[in-house]
Length: 517
Image 1 (cartoon, rainbow, N blue to C red):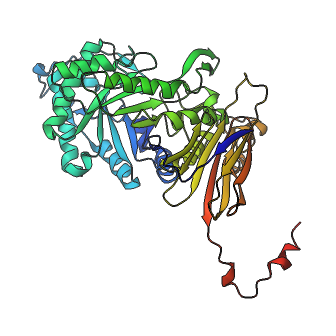
Image 2 (tube, helix red, strand yellow):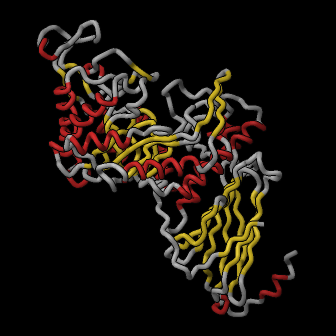
C-alpha cells in the first residue's frame, strides 16, 4: 500500500501544462482529410491542444511551387532548370491555395500552426533524393537565393492574409531531423547555412516572428550546443530550440510488425532535462525548449501504440518532463501515410485516434492530465496530485507493466487532512479491461476492416470506466484506498460539495434508504 498524504494548505511547486499545447500530424497534405480535422477538433476540445506541427509543408502534396507554364516559352536558363530532373520548365510560381485551405480550417477549429519549414520543393532541390511514400525532397536547395525568396513570399502572404498579430503567435521551426541522412543528405554545417537563410527570410517580413531549430533526432546527440554556438558566433537570430526523442533500446521487424525494447519510463524526462542543460550551458542560455516529436517508439507498425501500456508508460514523461516548454506527441491521427496507408483497424499507428475516430488509451491519458491543476501537492514515480484554482484536488495515477515486480497490481492509500469539507470523489480509469478497444477488436477476431456493427462495439468499448463516492473530511483525516491493475491509468477528481438538503421540504431520506441494498 503506497501512502499519499495530500496537504492542501502547503504551497506546492508549479505544474507546467506543457504536454498538451502542441500535437504532431503527418504530412501537411493529410490535413485536407476530414477525419484528421475531426481528430484535431477532438484534441482541441478534450485535451486542450493549441498548436499542430505542420510537417512536410513545402514538399510532396500539396506542393507550394508550380510552373507558370509547361512550354519552352518563358524558359529562364538562369534559374538553373534541369529538364532531366523535372517534368516541366518555366517560371517558378508560388501557389498557396491548399496551404490557405488548411490554415483557415485550423484557425476555425481554434488551433494555430507550429510551422515546420521544409521539405525542399521539387523544382528547388539540388538532387532527386527523396524520402517517404509522398516523395519528400530532402536535399539542400540548388539556389539559396530562390529558397530565401520562396520563404519570404510565403511569410509575406501569411502576413497579408492573417495579420501581424496572428502570425506573431505562431512558431517557425526550420526543417526536420537534419542529423539523419534520409531527412538531410548533407552536413550539419550545410543545415546551419539553410537555417541562416531561412531565418533571414522570415525576419525580413517581421523581425518579431519566432524562429528556431535545429529540429534534430535527439535521442543521443541533439546538436544543440553546436547549433547555438553557430548562431551566437555568426549573429544569426534564434528564438527557441527544438529537438526530438524516442526511448527505443532495440528494434526488430517481423513481417508487417515492429518490435521494440524500451528504456525505463524515466528516459524521456531525463533526456529533456539534458537538453535543457545543454541550452543553459551554451552561449545563448535560457532559450525555450520545444520537443516537437516524441512517442514510445519510432515505428507506425508497433502495436504498443494501440495498447494501455503506452498510456501507462508515457504518463511519467508527462508528469516529469517539465524541462521542456512544450512536448508534441507524435501524432494525433492514424491517418499516417509516410510508409503505407493503415493496414488494419489497429496496426500500431502513432495516432492518439484511429482512422474511425476511436480514441486510444493514450488519448485518455492526456485527457486525464489536462484536468490537473497547476499546483503540485504530491508527485512520485506512479502519481501526480495537484490543486486547482476551483478547489478541486485532482490526481493521475499510473501502473505500467514491469516484469521486475512480483505483482503487477499497485495499491495506494490517499490521506486528506481535516478540511471541514465534504468531497465527491470522481474516478475514471483505463486498463487492460476498460477503454481498451484493441482488446475488443481482438475478441471480435481481428478483422482488418471490421463491419459497421463491429465498429459500434469498438467505439462503445473505447471510453474510461467511471465511479463516484463520498469523501468526508470534516472531522478527521479521510483515507481513500485505490487499486490499479497492470497498465492502468486513473484520474481522481475530488470535488468540494456544498449540501443543499435543507432546501427540500419534507424529504425523508430514511424512507428511500430502506430501498437500497
